[in-house]
Image 1 (cartoon, rainbow, N blue to C red):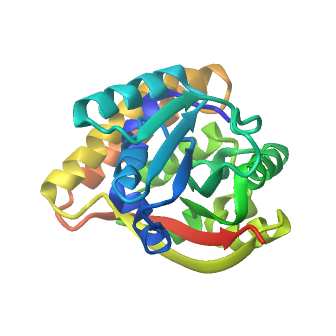
Image 2: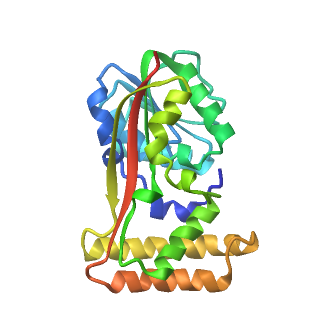
Image 3: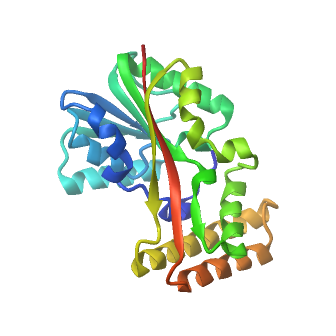
Length: 260
């Protein structure tokens, strides 16, 4: 999976909001793994619900940020570990629950299969896996300015998602989990709102600008975009942000499944 810090702000994980659908399935005696925890905001939120929370991420900077968060908040029941999701450093049947947020969508088919096999290995019998991931086909955008649509396409190019099946990953989570030997027990969807008010729209434009400026040279260098496309995308977001009725809701599909 391609990863770059410049895109993190635009795809910021929102702590408890991102895991709200999973909360009714959790209890205070559970040991939970947040797989691909990033800066630890979701892990920290879940630590207040379960007995023990462990966050893992392959990025050293993400783990450093997560440890800083734990220190600031005084959390004592959470641990962060640098690890590859396809080779977790845990014994079989360690966890009662495994959570994936904005992780599986970015993996190749082979990596996805290995990741879910590892999740199944470290889950206890009857344990739960929960996923929340993108479905570009469910996004709501208005007005559909060419520059903004181009910007969204540029991010998909970065993640090498160029077919309809990949762009509609979220709605296929249940089928994917079933194929990988889990039994889905619940499915739903929610939206990340980037346009609730003027401040939200301003933040969305600023985040998009940072991401495009950060990724732009790499996109151009890899032949995935041109300088003109980057400029057009930036102008599109600026125009979108000036529209008081502009909306951008990013779809997130959600699924909970059990290891039988």
